[in-house]
Image (cartoon, rainbow, N blue to C red; front, side, top):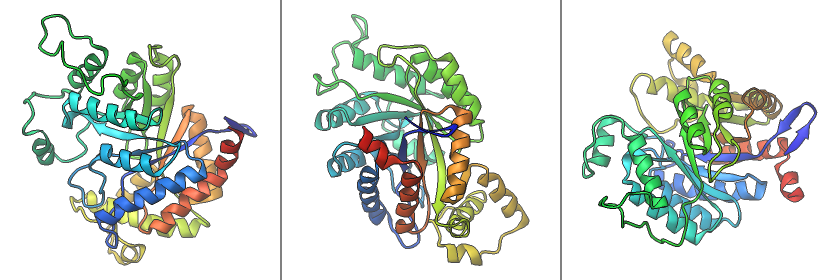
Length: 348
């Protein structure tokens, strides 16, 4: 960990959703993710996580396990993982086997982040689970326990799953991270002694409260002796504040439309500038901006350092949604220089 004055410069990582824009269809968005991952490794980012979302016009990342394999094959040493697998959508045995296969092919480089929400709307969620065993209500804990029991051989004698083994059986599951956007998620991660990643980029819950709750209540486990908390933040950095504001206008328009139930690919800054915003739109955008860090790299770095200090984050995971892929690459390049990632890689 690099110390800069009174602030800590911590490892940086990437959270990618493969943004779809009016000029970039989903197929191109997935290829852009491979390109960005290779750049992130060269720049010194610690890990690269891909999300799971379904039936969203602006996101192409629907199959994180497939993308993890492709990204890991296109890189050499950076950790690659799910941020995350939405466990309510999947049979735990399927998750275990897919991630054991990934761990077998890329040993020591895979992360399994587990999410509590379905990552989509209720109808699409039902379609994802229609051929699974029907379970009433929130069954995340049941599925999470099943995943752990399958991995640890914890089912008692006489249980029908007692002899079920996730294969390849000689490979352990990669490290499990619990993802969350609330105090409940933080407390669960602390209670089971696992890593925690907080979704500051979309949560209204206080990031400082969640991160400190996790740290204060953490119970060491067989897999993790001390707490480790990742803070996921939405960042748009550019050479100047004005340039960053122009890039962020695409996100502003997307949020204004989404609040009205309008879902579309990410629009260009030019289209955003021409949009006829209502006073309510401006109010909603202002609330959204409280979770979005935008500006020239000096201003962005200052805000991030304050956030790191207040939350005591061990790692910062950055997600950047802008219209132009080249500008997205540049935002990550600016952050890498500001946080001396390449120097940290050489020192390590």
